[in-house]
Image 1 (cartoon, rainbow, N blue to C red):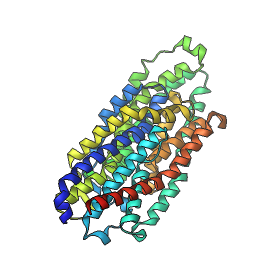
Image 2 (image 1 turned 60 degrees about the vertical axis):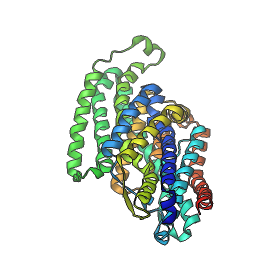
Image 3 (image 1 turned 180 degrees about the horizontal axis):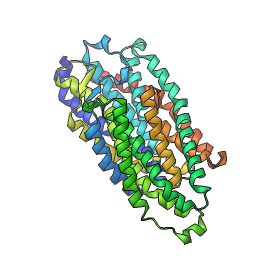
Length: 421
């Protein structure tokens, strides 16, 4: 308690600086991989992606990002043994933030799309083992993360592959693909509005005390889906075939129909990401602020002040604008070649998998789902359409993420302990 009273202001400053660094990493890596399909397919530019992220990530975080966050991330560690020495938890949370931020920076600089959640969980495990003991870690939760390494890309890939086959059957192999695209376009837009609404209703809006039943959520999502389909149809009706482009690429006009859809998916995914993951990324920062402001009380949950959400939003947008292009390049170009139809399938498959996982309790990672979905649309054209070297590097980075975060956090924990006592 005495250490917190003496250095409280310094701990707050460090929490804000490290928290901003961490959210910068989220923007550069996590948000970049959420927007990668839209940019890689050529539907929107990097500048437009940054603008969309700035508006919708912020809106998602502020409107539905939640006002409470678990101090001890997802029950990964039990802080009971250090309840009388809360400064150790402050060191641990600062170490976790710094370790996760550094790992995200390393991964982003190499273009690896890694899971932000796994990074921060690995960092907290590292602090838990170093600062409390091996028994303080909930190893069953770690086992679920290991399962998600396999489950997430498989599910995302399967749904994307099925969507791609449906577009091939309904549009590409029809007598007039362009007219078929305009006919079926509103239906695919309905799916965008419906599924992404369910992502927010099932996961993101739980802190708003709406308490909708499953049936009510489905009805609200259906209405939103219909509105998106109507708005999209008005845009699609204005698309004209480009005969000269069709000479170079037979389905160029079909892809022009799907381009406006990617605008919807990009906005919707940015909102869903902001509502789901921003608060998670700044949880440790909120924990330090709570402990310092309460004079050393350690709670399982703490209020998440609006200014922290605002800081998180700023960090994310700056991260996406400065280094996001590296991960967007990997997701959108290097795994397989994306077009608006393929990008649409990958994005919608990722959203659908998140809905499925949130209702069934499957342990999945949104980053891994996104990569799996891109692989799925590539696989629809055969294994030769995938760059297996790039995919191999991504898989290795996933395996390394958790231990890398843990090791860095343990090192920083001991450094903070040596400095402050």
